Image (cartoon, rainbow, N blue to C red; front, side, top):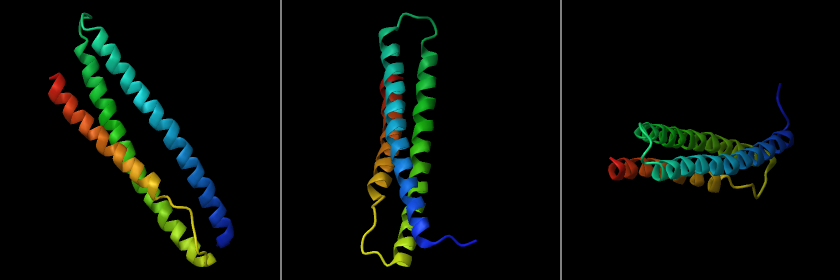
Length: 123
């Protein structure tokens, strides 16, 4: 069953809005969790076995980096679909998903750098 191009366009716009909303809320949540755990680690150095928290932080940072990286690939697929739909509808404009794509890539790189620098400084 073929979907009309205008309906595909509306679906893609809704999908883009949904991805953008999830990205903003998810990024804020991830950075809040990482910051909270790091502050807890710094302020509670006297607790026995607090070093385990460093492994948890490392795991969360690496997991977040992978999440951002693979999400950017999904967004790139949405961009390609936008190009197809805009050519079908002969549109002269379309919403750009590239800022979202680059934001995810930058977050992915920042997570990797945070892990590398954090492991060197805290080890």
